Amino acid sequence: MPKRSLRPTMRDVARLAGVSPMTVSRVQAGSALVAPETRDRINAAIAALGYVEDKVAASLSSRRTGFIATIVPTLTNSTFADTAHGLTEALRRSGYQLLIGYTRYRMSDEESLIRTMLERRPEAIVLAGMSHTEAAGTMLRGAGIPVVEIWDCGEADPIGYAVGFSNIESGRAAARHLIALGHRRIGAIGPTIGDDAHDFRGEARLTGFTEVLREAGLSTDRIVQRGDVPLSFAGGAAAMAHLLDTAGPLDAVFAISDLAAFGALMECQRRGIAVPGSLSVLGFGDFEIGDQCVPALSTIGIDAEDIGRRVGELLLRLLPGDAGDHGPTPTAVTDVGFKIVERGSTAPRPVST
Image 1 (tube, rainbow, N blue to C red):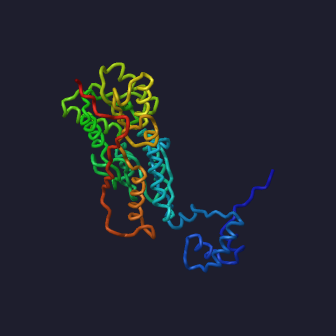
Image 2 (cartoon, helix red, strand yellow):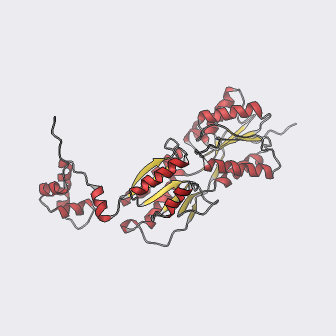
Image 3 (cartoon, helix red, strand yellow):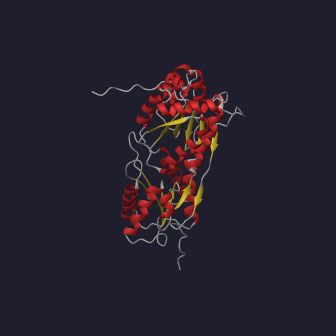
């Protein structure tokens, strides 16, 4: 059998570069105390040997792991990917890295991931939403590290910090917008509420949407919750088909995500229903596909990457060492807001003659 190669050590690098292991360690830490020519010699030795620093050993001595635990519902949704990108970019100069897990919108999976992440001693933990199991909440409150809940705020007090927006208010804004366009027979599309899988933020949007319809004296019978969490293109199309088949005359539809709204739009096209001539469709999230489809989707716009950036900037103020700027204590809640993005899939209701 072939011999197993030995992993190069810091001592091997020091020997090849003609310096002490302490000098190699200083270069690895980015110290300015090492002369440029010595640093170049050490970096050349690292490259020649293929040396990789043992962060586990370093963390055992420093009690710092250098990673931020990040838990999101899914990695296929571009909004959460954009948030992770913004967070990564904000942390890049500090040397912190993300360790990402996803829950598939399942409460039990989130609880398990929180336990697994905390066992590895992250510097901070970032997770989507403010709804958790009792056990998960207990672990987070006792973690002893910064906890940042994202993509939600306004309806509850955060465990530590929150960076997001009010999902209930975004649903209310969606209803008000469709009503302002003159629509009265208004429907909405969301996923079925499961035993363990929940899109709490989507459910909050529907709650806000429903409240405004009731306040306006409009029927809420056209609000449909069908399909698995998260609601996909196909799920949006199926829910739209059900709505068209059972709800009677319809002026406008709000979908809790652009994925579902795109599916609803395609179902209308298959049936020859003109959008927005006969029916307005409003989505949520401002996904790239919504800007490119025909007609382009009107939506509730959220700057997902900015959420990640703001979380990164918050953590750099909270974490110890060179990363933090030790400025004023950050506020517990950062509301990034949302906006109505009007495109081609919504239009004022034609005036009857």
